[in-house]
Length: 286
Image (cartoon, rainbow, N blue to C red; front, side, top):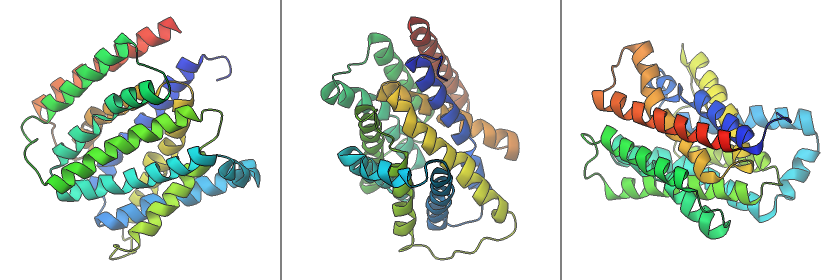
């Protein structure tokens, strides 16, 4: 990693993170745990696993990094916690397509916030990629995107804002390690879910699926995505995460034979090609 340029480091971290996230929807479909039970375990297990690993690596410096992260840490704890919660509540109160389309605005919002607060206006290639991928998301969900519950739609957009603000915050405080702040954010998520959870019990296959999902699809990616914006602009990091929209359904298709729509496949090809070309050009320039 030391021999790589910042562009290569950031792109690699974001790409690996999204690859770990892609089976997430499959694990959720395979589990029998209720929504708030999933939120609880997706907060608690990543918190415990990453917290103890960081304590082992950094020892008491973990708390030093946490307390010296300053306002960057406070902002990131807040946005990280809020987005983890608003995403779930949005899904519960509107169409899934509405939520995903709202979240697809995150790269665009990151670009705008980065230009305003960090004086990092995206270049022409990034803007074109953001617009093309956003239109592809609209196309994928054109049949199911409709007038949903206003409350759920607003929470979906708040999730996108939170993702954008979080990535810009990391970029702004790139000299600081904000992983401890993300760890605290996961603890807040688990604590919040306690007020709504109906059962803590895990039975049969959930004893394997839930911990595996929480470590592979939650713990590892949230560490990587907290580091990636230190090396590349926030808009580029969030652009990578649109890959999950197409690769996630492919996992579901392969394992439980739920075939994605033709719009998902066509739009997915456009998204993958756009991000691949954008990444190639950025890496070539670096």
